[in-house]
Length: 222
Image (tube, rainbow, N blue to C red; front, top):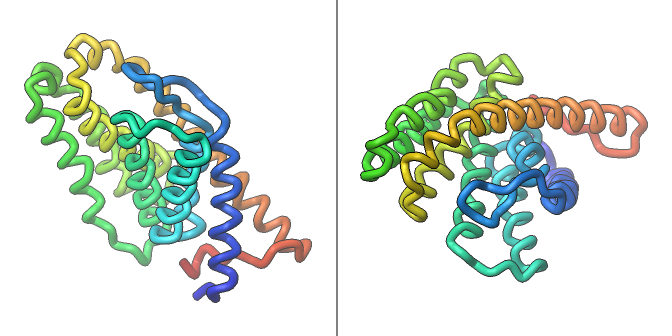
Protein backbone atom coordinates (compact mmCIF):
# COMPACT_ATOMS: atom_id res chain seq x y z
CA UNK A 1 0.00 0.00 0.00
CA UNK A 2 1.14 3.52 -0.67
CA UNK A 3 1.84 5.26 2.61
CA UNK A 4 -0.39 8.17 3.59
CA UNK A 5 2.16 10.85 2.80
CA UNK A 6 2.78 9.49 -0.68
CA UNK A 7 -0.96 9.19 -1.33
CA UNK A 8 -1.52 12.80 -0.32
CA UNK A 9 1.42 13.95 -2.44
CA UNK A 10 0.13 12.31 -5.60
CA UNK A 11 -3.42 13.38 -4.83
CA UNK A 12 -2.21 16.99 -4.66
CA UNK A 13 -0.03 16.60 -7.77
CA UNK A 14 -2.82 15.17 -9.91
CA UNK A 15 -5.26 17.77 -8.58
CA UNK A 16 -2.94 20.64 -9.55
CA UNK A 17 -2.30 19.28 -13.04
CA UNK A 18 -5.99 18.50 -13.39
CA UNK A 19 -6.95 22.05 -12.43
CA UNK A 20 -4.58 23.44 -15.05
CA UNK A 21 -6.02 21.16 -17.74
CA UNK A 22 -9.53 22.26 -16.74
CA UNK A 23 -8.67 25.83 -17.77
CA UNK A 24 -8.03 24.86 -21.40
CA UNK A 25 -11.34 24.70 -23.31
CA UNK A 26 -11.82 22.17 -26.07
CA UNK A 27 -15.27 22.71 -27.57
CA UNK A 28 -18.80 23.50 -26.48
CA UNK A 29 -21.41 20.93 -25.55
CA UNK A 30 -24.28 21.20 -28.00
CA UNK A 31 -27.33 22.77 -26.41
CA UNK A 32 -25.44 24.65 -23.68
CA UNK A 33 -22.74 27.21 -22.97
CA UNK A 34 -20.63 24.59 -21.18
CA UNK A 35 -17.35 23.56 -22.80
CA UNK A 36 -15.32 20.40 -22.83
CA UNK A 37 -11.72 20.96 -21.72
CA UNK A 38 -8.42 19.07 -21.74
CA UNK A 39 -9.53 17.85 -18.32
CA UNK A 40 -11.79 15.44 -20.22
CA UNK A 41 -8.55 13.81 -21.44
CA UNK A 42 -6.66 14.00 -18.16
CA UNK A 43 -9.40 13.40 -15.58
CA UNK A 44 -10.53 9.87 -16.47
CA UNK A 45 -7.05 8.37 -16.66
CA UNK A 46 -6.11 9.80 -13.25
CA UNK A 47 -7.96 6.86 -11.73
CA UNK A 48 -5.43 4.54 -13.35
CA UNK A 49 -2.74 6.01 -11.10
CA UNK A 50 -4.61 7.05 -7.97
CA UNK A 51 -7.15 4.23 -7.88
CA UNK A 52 -10.94 4.73 -7.88
CA UNK A 53 -11.36 6.45 -4.51
CA UNK A 54 -8.51 8.95 -4.69
CA UNK A 55 -9.07 9.39 -8.42
CA UNK A 56 -12.69 10.39 -7.89
CA UNK A 57 -11.73 12.58 -4.91
CA UNK A 58 -9.11 14.40 -6.97
CA UNK A 59 -11.37 14.99 -9.96
CA UNK A 60 -14.35 16.09 -7.87
CA UNK A 61 -12.19 18.45 -5.79
CA UNK A 62 -10.77 20.03 -8.94
CA UNK A 63 -14.25 20.52 -10.41
CA UNK A 64 -15.71 22.04 -7.25
CA UNK A 65 -12.72 24.33 -6.60
CA UNK A 66 -12.89 25.50 -10.20
CA UNK A 67 -16.56 26.42 -9.77
CA UNK A 68 -15.82 28.51 -6.68
CA UNK A 69 -12.71 30.21 -8.07
CA UNK A 70 -14.46 31.19 -11.28
CA UNK A 71 -17.67 31.94 -9.42
CA UNK A 72 -19.49 29.89 -12.01
CA UNK A 73 -23.27 30.15 -11.71
CA UNK A 74 -24.71 26.84 -10.58
CA UNK A 75 -26.80 26.35 -13.70
CA UNK A 76 -28.29 22.97 -14.50
CA UNK A 77 -25.62 22.38 -17.13
CA UNK A 78 -22.78 23.29 -14.77
CA UNK A 79 -24.06 20.95 -12.05
CA UNK A 80 -24.60 18.08 -14.51
CA UNK A 81 -21.04 18.50 -15.77
CA UNK A 82 -19.68 17.67 -12.30
CA UNK A 83 -20.64 14.01 -12.39
CA UNK A 84 -20.04 12.20 -15.73
CA UNK A 85 -16.26 12.41 -15.43
CA UNK A 86 -16.44 10.81 -11.97
CA UNK A 87 -17.96 7.70 -13.54
CA UNK A 88 -15.28 7.77 -16.24
CA UNK A 89 -12.60 7.89 -13.52
CA UNK A 90 -14.13 4.93 -11.70
CA UNK A 91 -14.40 2.97 -14.93
CA UNK A 92 -10.79 3.58 -15.95
CA UNK A 93 -9.45 2.92 -12.46
CA UNK A 94 -11.32 -0.34 -11.99
CA UNK A 95 -10.76 -1.67 -15.49
CA UNK A 96 -7.03 -0.85 -15.33
CA UNK A 97 -6.32 -2.97 -12.27
CA UNK A 98 -7.40 -6.61 -12.44
CA UNK A 99 -7.68 -6.88 -8.67
CA UNK A 100 -10.96 -4.98 -9.01
CA UNK A 101 -13.78 -7.15 -10.34
CA UNK A 102 -16.03 -4.18 -10.96
CA UNK A 103 -18.75 -5.87 -12.98
CA UNK A 104 -21.20 -3.52 -11.29
CA UNK A 105 -19.78 -0.95 -13.71
CA UNK A 106 -21.79 -2.61 -16.45
CA UNK A 107 -25.01 -1.54 -14.77
CA UNK A 108 -24.13 2.14 -15.28
CA UNK A 109 -24.44 2.22 -19.09
CA UNK A 110 -27.39 -0.18 -18.92
CA UNK A 111 -29.27 2.14 -16.56
CA UNK A 112 -28.37 5.10 -18.75
CA UNK A 113 -29.79 3.35 -21.81
CA UNK A 114 -33.02 2.61 -19.93
CA UNK A 115 -33.25 6.19 -18.63
CA UNK A 116 -32.75 7.61 -22.12
CA UNK A 117 -35.34 5.35 -23.74
CA UNK A 118 -37.79 6.04 -20.91
CA UNK A 119 -37.89 9.69 -21.99
CA UNK A 120 -40.54 10.45 -24.66
CA UNK A 121 -37.92 12.01 -26.93
CA UNK A 122 -35.46 9.20 -26.24
CA UNK A 123 -38.02 6.68 -27.42
CA UNK A 124 -37.91 8.36 -30.83
CA UNK A 125 -34.16 7.79 -31.14
CA UNK A 126 -33.39 4.69 -29.03
CA UNK A 127 -30.56 3.72 -31.37
CA UNK A 128 -28.59 6.75 -30.12
CA UNK A 129 -28.23 5.25 -26.66
CA UNK A 130 -27.96 1.65 -27.82
CA UNK A 131 -25.17 2.18 -30.35
CA UNK A 132 -22.98 4.27 -28.06
CA UNK A 133 -23.60 3.12 -24.52
CA UNK A 134 -23.16 -0.57 -25.23
CA UNK A 135 -19.46 0.27 -25.85
CA UNK A 136 -18.43 0.44 -22.14
CA UNK A 137 -19.98 -2.99 -21.61
CA UNK A 138 -18.07 -4.53 -24.51
CA UNK A 139 -14.87 -2.68 -23.58
CA UNK A 140 -14.92 -4.19 -20.10
CA UNK A 141 -14.03 -7.56 -21.62
CA UNK A 142 -11.06 -6.08 -23.52
CA UNK A 143 -9.52 -4.41 -20.50
CA UNK A 144 -5.92 -5.19 -21.55
CA UNK A 145 -6.19 -2.78 -24.49
CA UNK A 146 -5.46 0.81 -23.43
CA UNK A 147 -7.41 2.45 -26.25
CA UNK A 148 -10.44 0.18 -25.77
CA UNK A 149 -10.64 0.86 -22.04
CA UNK A 150 -10.17 4.57 -22.74
CA UNK A 151 -13.08 4.32 -25.17
CA UNK A 152 -15.15 2.56 -22.52
CA UNK A 153 -14.26 5.27 -20.02
CA UNK A 154 -15.21 8.21 -22.22
CA UNK A 155 -18.47 6.54 -23.32
CA UNK A 156 -19.32 5.89 -19.67
CA UNK A 157 -19.09 9.64 -19.08
CA UNK A 158 -21.10 10.21 -22.26
CA UNK A 159 -23.79 7.78 -21.13
CA UNK A 160 -24.22 9.41 -17.72
CA UNK A 161 -24.20 12.90 -19.18
CA UNK A 162 -26.54 12.02 -22.03
CA UNK A 163 -29.07 10.24 -19.84
CA UNK A 164 -29.30 13.22 -17.51
CA UNK A 165 -29.10 15.80 -20.32
CA UNK A 166 -32.19 14.55 -22.15
CA UNK A 167 -34.30 14.78 -18.99
CA UNK A 168 -32.88 18.19 -18.03
CA UNK A 169 -33.11 19.94 -21.41
CA UNK A 170 -35.53 17.92 -23.55
CA UNK A 171 -33.43 18.32 -26.68
CA UNK A 172 -35.53 17.32 -29.70
CA UNK A 173 -34.97 14.03 -31.51
CA UNK A 174 -33.49 15.83 -34.52
CA UNK A 175 -30.68 17.16 -32.33
CA UNK A 176 -29.80 13.69 -31.05
CA UNK A 177 -29.80 12.36 -34.61
CA UNK A 178 -27.53 15.18 -35.71
CA UNK A 179 -25.18 14.49 -32.82
CA UNK A 180 -24.34 10.95 -33.97
CA UNK A 181 -21.42 11.83 -36.32
CA UNK A 182 -20.24 14.49 -33.84
CA UNK A 183 -20.20 11.98 -30.98
CA UNK A 184 -18.31 9.41 -33.04
CA UNK A 185 -15.54 11.86 -33.93
CA UNK A 186 -15.52 13.49 -30.51
CA UNK A 187 -15.34 10.28 -28.46
CA UNK A 188 -12.68 8.72 -30.69
CA UNK A 189 -10.63 11.85 -30.08
CA UNK A 190 -11.35 11.73 -26.35
CA UNK A 191 -10.36 8.07 -26.13
CA UNK A 192 -7.14 8.83 -27.97
CA UNK A 193 -6.50 11.75 -25.64
CA UNK A 194 -7.12 9.66 -22.52
CA UNK A 195 -4.82 6.89 -23.76
CA UNK A 196 -2.10 9.36 -24.79
CA UNK A 197 -2.39 11.20 -21.47
CA UNK A 198 -2.04 7.93 -19.57
CA UNK A 199 1.12 6.97 -21.47
CA UNK A 200 2.59 10.46 -21.14
CA UNK A 201 1.92 10.67 -17.40
CA UNK A 202 3.21 7.14 -16.83
CA UNK A 203 6.44 7.89 -18.71
CA UNK A 204 6.89 11.22 -16.93
CA UNK A 205 6.33 9.77 -13.46
CA UNK A 206 8.70 6.86 -14.14
CA UNK A 207 11.32 9.24 -15.52
CA UNK A 208 11.10 11.62 -12.57
CA UNK A 209 11.14 8.69 -10.14
CA UNK A 210 14.28 7.30 -11.82
CA UNK A 211 15.90 10.73 -11.41
CA UNK A 212 14.76 10.68 -7.77
CA UNK A 213 12.79 13.88 -8.30
CA UNK A 214 9.52 12.17 -7.33
CA UNK A 215 8.69 9.12 -5.25
CA UNK A 216 7.91 6.03 -7.29
CA UNK A 217 4.25 5.36 -7.95
CA UNK A 218 3.78 1.61 -8.27
CA UNK A 219 0.59 1.02 -10.25
CA UNK A 220 0.45 -2.58 -9.10
CA UNK A 221 -0.14 -1.46 -5.51
CA UNK A 222 -3.40 0.40 -6.16
